[in-house]
Image 1 (cartoon, rainbow, N blue to C red):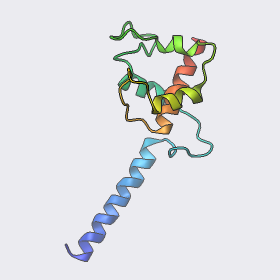
Image 2: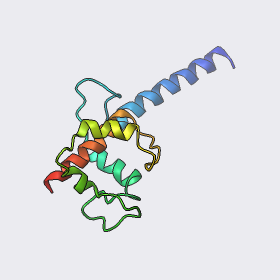
Image 3: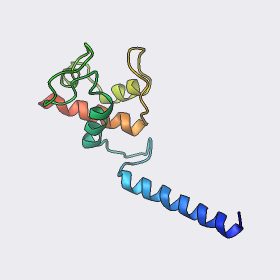
Image 4: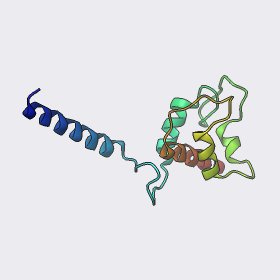
Amino acid sequence: MRPRHVLSHVFAFALAAIFFQISSGHAAQNEPGYIPSVAHGQDLAKRWCASCHVVAPDQKSAVADVPPFATIARYPNFNADQLARFLLDPHPKMPDLPLTRTGADDIAAYIGSLKKK
């Protein structure tokens, strides 16, 4: 490749990376002051967790014999930070989910939001 072509490819990659970061609407992993997104957590839960867990009030059933997210939220010792860490290093019965720390925080925040419902 010519130097000009290389530079244009680097520029295009940089723009794509910036666009992806802006369009995701989420802070970088472990960014200080990050406020978990309940809405993003709900989206992730519906995508990755709904096949085993009942993740939303309008979901009627799931395949596995595991607690619904609303039940988890009402556990007396529920702690969103501990749950997020657990999701990043799940036990053998759970699949290895492609979660970032912010994704785990978002799912934990969503589950915590179900405590009130």
